[in-house]
Image (cartoon, rainbow, N blue to C red; front, side, top):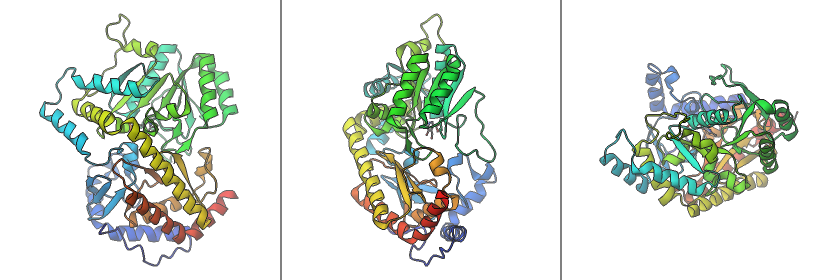
Length: 455
Ligand SMILES: Cc1ncc(COP(=O)(O)O)c(C=O)c1O
């Protein structure tokens, strides 16, 4: 590692949250002039220079020019270990040779062929063989689309209207249910959605009972991803399964992120069989994708040979590049053995970071499961609900982010960390070292925030 985004040894003001955050932002700006230039020129043709909201952070985001393995380089020449892993889609790292080779071969054979190719059925069979609840499945182009289609399939099947989702859940750009409403609201599709509190069984069961005859589906992330890597309690998921059986409601697991957490997803780890599952992210080998599947009696309605068939269109549903990359990834790289090993590494890293916190008596927690985790600065206990992390001050999350970037570690602004396959023990050591420095340098701010959140 040659360069870092700013000098980490500089004496930080660190007196209070607001001035520490302002100082960190100033150092960041000083270290990233070319990213600023890119941001300004992008803003002339895109609102805020942005075309994907999650990538924006204040004062302006980095612009990356190259990735290789688990490394990233930005336009100012800084090198980072990529611990963001493209919000779980970057599972394979950058330019995995098996995947790039599969893409090149597909490219050479011609794209946009306007017909079926051998690839999609091979990928569907590979997914079906891994996810026990999937009898039949279909592809689409994003996780958002996968959820929209799964919800539509459930409404068609049950002939009911309403959806029960959870506050703090994220199912896509137009299916977003943030715990704290964003200032400008959301752009959700106008579905009749009832929001229940995540991991609150009594309240959720009451809502199900009150709406049972109108509920087509319950949709849940078995671990909140964007919501802070908060796991659903196994007994909570089991109770949802029972309630859905009792009332004829379709249980949808959104495993767009969490399907990577074992060979057969988080549903396998929890021993629960949803009726439908939505997929996306890494399943296309790093190219755009989405998929949904599950019970044959629900999915069969999409069979075009049936007289009562329902159409599901999508020009690029079976695009050859994604399908070829997905097959190579799932069958040759992210094998069941690789999935077990990567998630073990994630468990070990999370435990190591939490041990560093304990040793320093610092006020922070790392939540998550397997290869997905989230750092929560300024709280004392593992979060069980989105409310447990809602009070963390934004500037403290900003400081964590800046401090990690300064030390050459790329993470999400909200503290999310996702492992990728090319990572080595050396990368985990780098992460642990940077994290420990953060805990030490920011001990006062962490304690102050923890005190405030308890009041
Ligand atoms: C759990 C979950 N569902 C759905 C989506 C939407 O996927 P996409 O961004 O591919 O539309 C995401 C994206 O982050 C997600 O985390």
